[in-house]
Length: 425
Ligand code: ADE
Image (tube, helix red, strand yellow):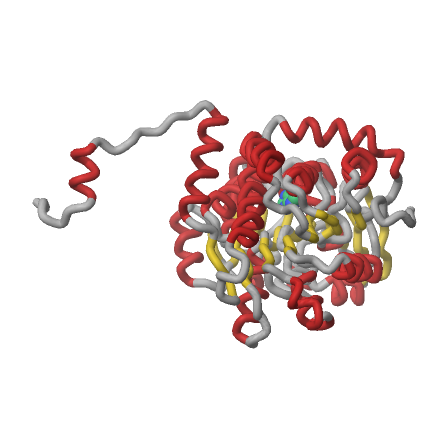
């Protein structure tokens, strides 16, 4: 549905879903005390007055709280989906109907619609872009050089997006400041690890209803997302195999108690495969050939490129929907391989993404990174910028306080000791 008035421009599934979205957004807010405090301060201080802001995020109950906080701070904010399959249509409806935020996102939108929404977002002529995977920034650089003068800076949520921004910087095309939200401690230690760990298994279970205990689960990639996924799969009783290309991470996985081997060796052993590498064709033709009958494959990395579905499709005689987000590929060989969530982020396709409690910290970083960009407009060098340590620590402090947990403080004697090199053995 597209409305014509500028204020209520949107392209969402169904505005009548708004009451459900409103209730679910409200529910998520119970677990987001840090962002709530930031929103309340923004409402007083209005740091984004006159700022046009585009957020390209998964349209979830948690993102709703980020968008509401930015709007409370005075931003002229517009929201698009960062993935064709992650939008919660009721949330999109509530943001439009209850909060007057323009949203362009429909769960299941095709790639053409997804890219059209990116163009619509850029038509908003953003001063700030919150990106999740770097598609908006990449499109801006590729097609809209004339808009760079409007841009104060961008923020990036994901490991994948940071890898892309580094490549842009290397190519000399990142000519503006980009805040590296992903690498803040209060982001990746929690969101990437515990968020991905829990929500990935949640998505797999919602899609399939399988028992994980006793299954052999192959986790491809042992970055923060892989660590969380492997940890939680083991917690559910699975026998976990990790595959890696980085020797240090591989040793880490071994010493964390996992079996480590190349995908070619893991392929015939796995019952369930989860890719979280950020790279392309991690599971491909030669792996499908040796998998067990009924093996399941899914992805929790940012893009849907980790599983080579084209090569699987070429081997298939039939593809049928077995359940929601669960497709069975019957192969010429007689066996079948099951693909979950079309190889897109399974945690957001079949479940609701990371729980609110971790997104509270991730989006606190996003909100404060946007404020930092505005406060330091014209002063920051082009390229990637870390979230300042004081901001990171303040988010952790606020989170602990909200959890009712206190920590120790150094005594004067300890401060003196830690700052001195004189006292040794
Ligand atoms: N990325 C992962 N989980 C998410 C969530 N719940 N909301 C927004 N972005 C996410």
